[in-house]
Amino acid sequence: MLAAMLLAGCGSGDDGGTSGGRDGGTGGGAVGGDLTGTLTVFAAASLTGVFTDLGDRLEADHPDLDVQFNFAGSSALATQITQGAPADVFASANTGQMNVVADADLADGEPEVFTANVLEIAVPAGNPADVTGLADFEREELALAVCAPEVPCGAAAEDVFAAAGVTARPDTQEEDVRAALTKVELGEVDAALVYATDVAAAGDSVEGISFPEAEDAVNDYPVCVLADAPNPAAARAFVELVLSDEGRTALADAGFRTP
Image (cartoon, rainbow, N blue to C red):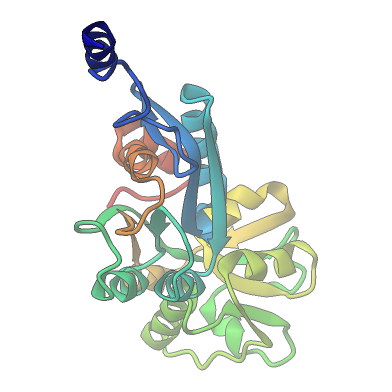
């Protein structure tokens, strides 16, 4: 009996059993310094190209990490987050929609502005309607697109029209800036107000027309890790990448401004 008790005592110590061990749950995180699981980033539609590239870079450094994006209008994303949609990171195209999330105590720490953007007029290649500036948004014979006013690009459009004294007559108000750009690319409208970065990303399919009033509505882009992030370690890594020199270079290459 004494021998059996001694053997049992030896076996009940720190034997590397499951008690207190790491089970590698589905939430993901850092294991041995690496990132695992799924990272979900909610980001403004205008960030589609550059954020997809940054996500690919993070995945290349962490093969067990799967980066998923939800690109849409910032107002729609903020609503989804406040209604409980699971996400790790939020990047907004203006501070107003970020404030919606932060004021609901859903941001982990203070959001940080990482870039800026301005509006530009996009027209189909060749500019068949001879659009020259904001005043053309008063021409009733033209098919015109802007973003809906609750979306950052739509709010900025209202500001530039007011600064220019233009009473715009848009035929459609789109849910995000990519939708407005697509209508130009397909030739469905003669002009749209989009971001300068979207014109650059569209290549030869559209032409951009700048205007001085754009400087009256510069949009700052803030980013934050969300308070209830399912994968906070990966979320912090992605935000750090966005804020790094590498991230800022990628943003500048895409036409974004340094804040």
